Amino acid sequence: MRMVYDQIDIKATPERVWKVFTDFSSFPSWNPFIRQMKGELVPGRKLQITLRLGRSMLRFRPRVTVVKPTREIRWLARQRIHRLFDVERAFEFEPEGASGTRFVQFEVGRGLLAPIIMPIMHRRIAKGYAALNQALKARAEGLR
Image (cartoon, rainbow, N blue to C red; front, side):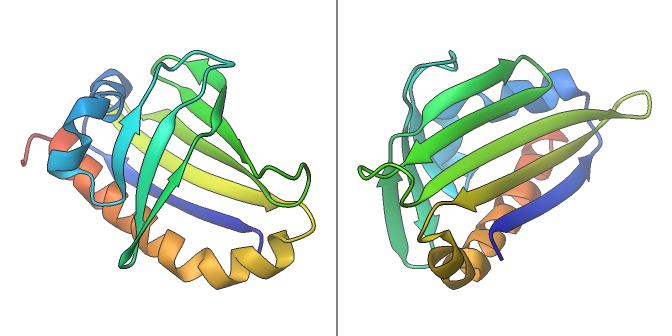
C-alpha cells in the first residue's frame, strides 16, 4: 500500500480546527504524532518536522506546496536522490454541516522505494494519524 488515509469529524468550525492545527508552538503539549513543526505555511518554504513513529522519532524537512487557509495544507518530502522515495502529505479541513469539520489527512508515497517502504511504515503511520485525529478533535472541541 502506497497511501495512508484517515479522517475524523470534529464539532468545531473549519476556522477553529485550522487555528488549533496551525498553532505549531503548541504541538508538544497536545499532538502525539507531529511532536514538533517549525516554519511558515508559505508555498515553496521548508518546514522542520519531528514525527513520533512508535518509539522512533523521524525528522525531515518537506517543502510546502499548497496553503488554502481553513481548507488545505500540502507538503512534499523528498529524499536526496530524486524519485527514490517522495511523500506528498495533505491535510484537508472540510465544512461539515453548519458548524462542524471533517478533518482528512493522507499521504502518498512515490518512487522506486515506495512499494517497499510504505507497507513497512503503514501501520505506524496509521496509528499516528489516529492519535493526531483524536487529540485534534479533543483540543478543537475544547475538551483539553
